[in-house]
Length: 421
Image (tube, rainbow, N blue to C red):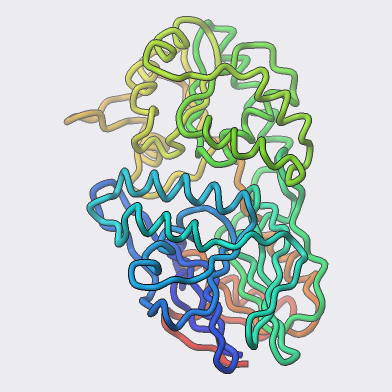
């Protein structure tokens, strides 16, 4: 078997890995690296559609799915994924096309072709195509999200995609019940970070929300539409929060998709009750009405770039009674990162000081350092480990630590590198 690194080499974004055995090629993910609005995304290495026998998608996030439609411009492939992954991918790809039309390598026809050629796969069901067999396992990262096992001629590769061994309010933890592995491709996103325990983050969020509402303010929670918004709403539900909770934006569409797949959830009843209790915001009048009284508003974008976040920032950021709870990753060059680092926002042509109280609370869907090391510890066999999907320092350091702690051959591969085993 051979693995070619098509993307995510010492960077977070544009994941893609080409697995070959004899005359069969599987492409594991094929995403984009989105940059600031107005900047062209980065794409994985090019591959001819005719050279691919199957595309296996770990989960819906655009850094893993965002360039798959380009493979349908001049070809027809089969995309294998769980049902929630396929539905959420369509939603996110359509949104990306709307926002980044000038930079996309495909159009709506290609997205539709991708969906027409999709194949539904459930967890723990082995599928064989020519010389390769693959299987999806529960990843704990996002609903429908998967790790991927590929086998051929008694060799086994395990690709973590994005993984969360502990899960969340919505999801069970990752399934690590595997046979012996020869090669492990592992994400390294938070391999150098120890995250705040989830219980502490939840209690901090509830405490902050109550403080803001007690002073007659509004708490704005900018959150990613897929899963983070729902996770935060479930936290409020689980803690029996007594004040109004509004939700806005694309998260409402995601709610409908998640509702169709209760068996993928840790506690379906909590999610159902959450949806009954949140107040949906559908238009500008709803937004104007929501901010008139103390409440919590959950709305994209998670990094304060675009979405309805701009409206809420204009209305809420300049009153000290209000609060802003940052519960999503804040990328470099984003409004959220600027707010965290400087206490300022760039609105129109000027930078302005924010008067609302700002707090960052960790609710990551990725495993942190200890969780990722625990994944390595639980893997059977004596695999070679490829550390990917992290910045250059994280990948290289994590690879060295794996070698020191477990005695496994481990390194951070370069873009375009081919590993044979």
